[in-house]
Length: 144
Image (cartoon, rainbow, N blue to C red; front, side):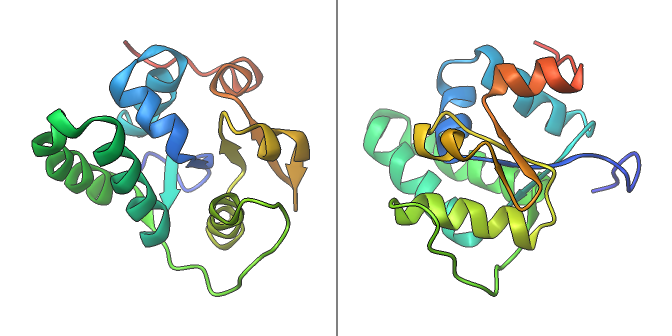
């Protein structure tokens, strides 16, 4: 994948944002479109992709056939990294995996709807925002 510049913002899209973007649209979809349009770089990890797959299967069993195509697209478009360090910052272990991915991927933002992560506000200079907050703060416009 050829990104426009090396200075592009790097973000982790939490599982709840990916699910929301794909299933419901709205601001989450606008953020995902920024990734698809190569305006920002999305970073993920095998653990986060496995969580996405598990949640997607559980919430949308009838759309299971679409999942493989969706995962292939994500793996092709997103920068996949393997965090080396484990963190125990918040109670939810899945949220700690999000933090690990963001730190290892040298991300600028974590985009999430998770209250516990949002309460942190910032972690190691990584801003933690909702899709709406991210779009307002950065001035990006996702195409719909």
